[in-house]
Length: 374
Image (cartoon, rainbow, N blue to C red; front, side):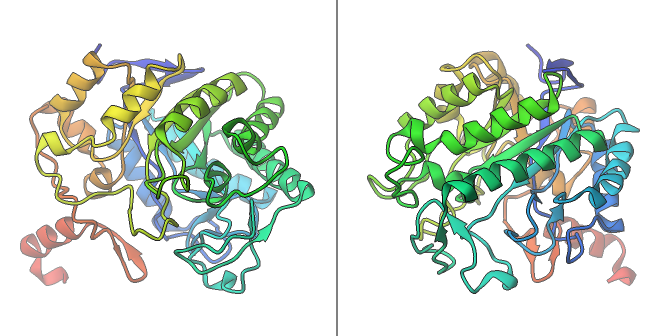
């Protein structure tokens, strides 16, 4: 198999096996509407050669916002602007998926410091200090409906797929995490029960959008929490099987619960050597070998030759990147010309500064080339 070969997921033609992973750009307006800056971000990405783009997470409910500046698709007024975004990307022969998220108690949005958010159980979030309201079954049905309605809007806007964010400690991820989920009903306890809300979201979306539209899931392989508190790899393997049976088309495997209180992020620094990169490889391979739907490796993918070797030596079929494509949206095109090209991204995690998102390395290079612009 070749990294740059054309493949298909559901009915989506992919020009290669490299995805742009979802990345919060902090560029939407207060209500989540798409700005000119965001249109430019995705236009540049669509020209850069990635096999598929996954947008930064978008809110499906105006009463739940994981971060300021995130896109919205929570009512029909968003359809036309998302259609414009999709058309820009499609004009460069690149497919695009929208990532959908519910934040729950994991929010950095200033409007939600009053703990007016939902969670599987009323357990204080170690990172944000928010104690959510334990969800009733009606609340759960509301969340399922919000994800479904957002997916229908995405389909109307022309997106090729949706990706459900069930990783990193956001609401769907919290249901999978024993520390957050102390429920004693059908949504708590064993791993089948803890994954039930996500299965209901998948099933509801599939019923609403039909068989041609792709549904992808971003999930953790491990929460990296203390024993008994977090999702484990053994659980994640079972969850992957459950999602496959529910109708998911692709699984993107990550790791770390950002609300664990341990300060662990899925993004690592100082991974300059190829052997330190692609750092979720082993657990992702275990999940990939347990399911028949395609599995995507994320986390420190930086080296073309290493990714090609992983493709040929494991069951992993796809690879996603965020930070390197923030630095160089055209990185895949550069690899097409020269597979030995070394990306500029040094994994410094300096992408996020107060009020803006961008690549520190690129900015320093631009300052050297064009000192009059700074």
